[in-house]
Length: 121
Length: 121
DNA sequence: CCCATAAGTATCCTTTTTGATACCCTGGCA
DNA sequence: TGCCAGGGTATCAAAAAGGATACTTATGGG
Image (cartoon, rainbow over all chains, first blue to last red; front, side, top):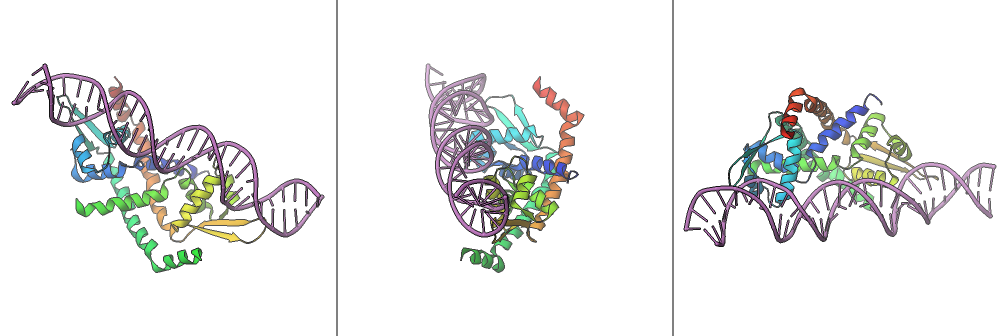
């Protein structure tokens, strides 16, 4: 048991990077579309406010997942991209995607639905 | 882009199962130690309240990750275990653990620390 | 002189999550 | 008779996360 405890914290560290209402979609856009300006991201992510976008991007920057580059000009230009290191998290996102897809199937499977009904009765 | 959007929701579905202050540690204990009574889990997880434990366990049960078995006796006895299906999420936890470990190393690496210092100046 | 622009901050407020605490049930035991 | 156990629920409070809105900044253009 003791030998496994550290495992737990690492899992939680990883989860911390991914949790936040807009973080998965931010990462998704940066991974798929490459470098993006702040306003491009904002437009690409419907519903996000400037504040949340800033907050989450800054957190990702802190974690060295995202790179923030400021061009000293007016009006400002700021570009965001995934760091080389940040790309290493992609396989985990892929794994979650795959598992999530199967999970949905599972939750809709007949056997599962039947068990749900039993409990309701 | 459109073809990738669905990926995102699946990732979020998977994250939903894992997020919650005590969920990783609950899963960890059930995965490592097998079937556990409510009180065993409570004792094994320092700081958790009965309420949070109940809440999270019920959510995991909803998702068919955890099985809850009630023995009709007094005082009550309730056992929790990972479902067969729930075990399929273990590789993802493992992957997160591995990535998390590397992430910690990365964040402590000399190069990273130096970049952090530059920014502070 | 005034406006628009991009990328923010600053304030305040709402919603969601988490936590503290007290109470419930019921059969066996002192 | 009264208390304990185990696994909860109910109620309220605190903390964290998320969101709405207004303000800032400097410069080129009309």
